[in-house]
Image (cartoon, rainbow, N blue to C red; front, side, top):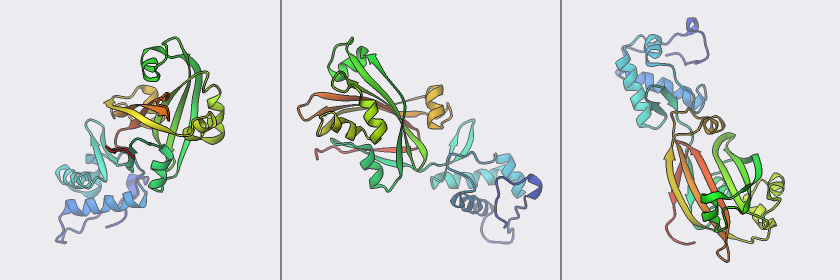
Length: 257
């Protein structure tokens, strides 16, 4: 059976199955697709050809193709979205949530390259949810930073951080130099900080969130709302993080480190 080149013209495709082989046709198709996924001919998150197209390539019926795709889905190599098609699964990052949650530590532990891009910063009034989290007045000013985090060069999360002023005035300038919230807090007098609370929910992304995270509007985001406090228990950071569905696995550590 020849290799699969997803970018070749239809006229160049020659997908011949060994019909005399004991291996079922659906398994041969699944093996061929798996090889091409491993080789990177289909990138993470890319949509595979339709069942009809694959059936035409391999000269089989759609039921046979569907069985092959189901097998790949059972092995977590692909995922199916109703009405959208079948997509190559992304690498899932295991993200530990504990008393000392640190983005860099989580990614370094898995030997994942990572980066943080400051896409917006401004001074705003705290308002209701932020003021309650930071235990300040709703009219108090806070520094807002919106950061896009990448793992292995791909968008992983979008976080909106809120820091009380005047304690953290100019914090965005420190982030531009360091790319680290931990170093930013350290530069502003916070030697260590701890996760006091994390709330988790799922919802559909906004158009802008879907664009930045490389998602379709039909894929949900996993949203966490967290409060970090300093060594005296004073709130120093309220963060709202949106992770692309299927890209992250949250691991909740239930004991204190």
